[in-house]
Length: 110
Image (cartoon, rainbow, N blue to C red; front, side):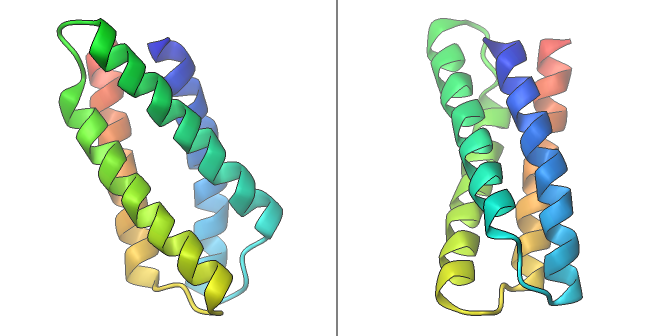
């Protein structure tokens, strides 16, 4: 289960990097990619939550960071759908928090 979460987070990260290039250039993000990135990360987060409740020790720090990143992602998608500008600082922070969570998850798993 943790491997599946890692794979999903990896795919979400690749799409996230692609989306970040659009945000940093001030261009509109491709909605198909946006609506793929979020669900991939959300399913990864759900698998991580399930894993955390079923195993001890659990990657609690990683789970917390991914939850914070998810909250930032909800703000980003809401801004993206309602306005034309997504805050660049928030997009960067969202990605950095998710990367930190991913590194901790990899450290825990391997």
